[in-house]
Length: 366
Image (cartoon, rainbow, N blue to C red):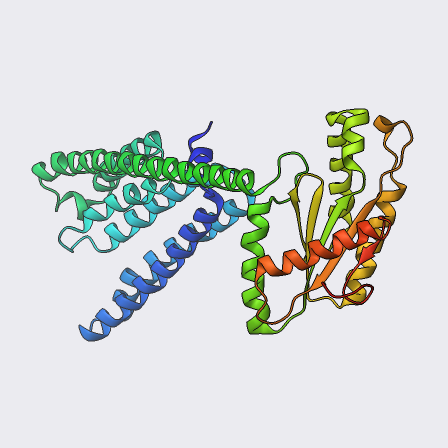
C-alpha cells in the first residue's frame, strides 16, 4: 500500500492549497517591500526595479509555470511544489542579500516537504536546497562576498540537520496518526459489536422480530410520549390458530417454518412507525402509533388474509389462520394493562370461531 493511501492524503488538494499560499506570499512580500521603500524614502525607480519589479516578476513567472504544470500533471506535482519553493526562496535571497540570516529561507522548502509524509522526499528537498545554496552563492558575487568560509560549511550542515529533524517530526506524526487510526478502528469495532449484541439481546432469533423484552421497553417509552404528546396508540395481539396441532402433527421444525412465515407477513404488513415483536410461543404483538382505529384494522385485516392465503409445504396443503385481539391506549393506562386488554380480545376472537379480529367495538368490553 502506498504511504499516501495509508495516510488518506489528497495530494492534489494540498498542492492547490500550497499554490494558493505562494500567490498570497508573493502579494504579501511585494506589499511589505513597497511599504519599507516608502518608509525609508528609497522608493526611486532603481529601488523599485531591484527590490520589486525584477524579483516579483521572476516569482510571478515561476508561479505561472506552476499553475500550468498543475493543470497538466495529475500526479507527482509535489515534486514541482518543492522545486518552486526553492526557486522562489533563491530569488528572495538574491534580492535581499543584505539582510542578515536571509539564507535561512532555504529551510522553507524542507518545511513544505513535511506535509507529504515521505522520507525520500524530504531528503531530496534538502539535497536540492544544498545545491541551490552552493550554486546561487557561487554565481552571484553579492552573495559570495558576504558568505564566510564558516557559512559555506555551516549552511549545508544546518539544512541537513533541518531535514533530519523534519524526518523525525514526520515519523512521529505518522506514529501518532497510526495510533489514532488504530484507536478509531477499535472504537468502531467495539461499537459494531455492541450494536450486534444489542440486536441479539433485543431480537427473537427464530423470527427476526423484536423479542418481549424489547417490546416492554419500547411500549413503556411510547406510553410516556402518548401521554405528553397526545398521539394515538393501539396494541394488537396475534396468535396462530391450532398451533399445538401443527407441532404435534407435523413436528416442531414445521411449526418453526410457520412462525417464520407469519413474522414475514407481519414485517411486510406494518409501517415504519409500527413496532412488531414476538411475544412468546406462537403469539405476536404489534404496537401501532399515530393511526386511527380504522387504519389499524385495515392493516390487521390484510395481515390476517395474507396469512390465511399462505401455503406451507411442510403441512401438506393445510392452511393456517390467525386470531387477533386489538385494544386502543387510554390516557394513564399502564403497559401491562394494555397488553392484558389486547390479549383478552384475542381470546374472545378464539372463542368466536378464530380467524378474526376482535376489539372493543366488535365485542363486549373486557
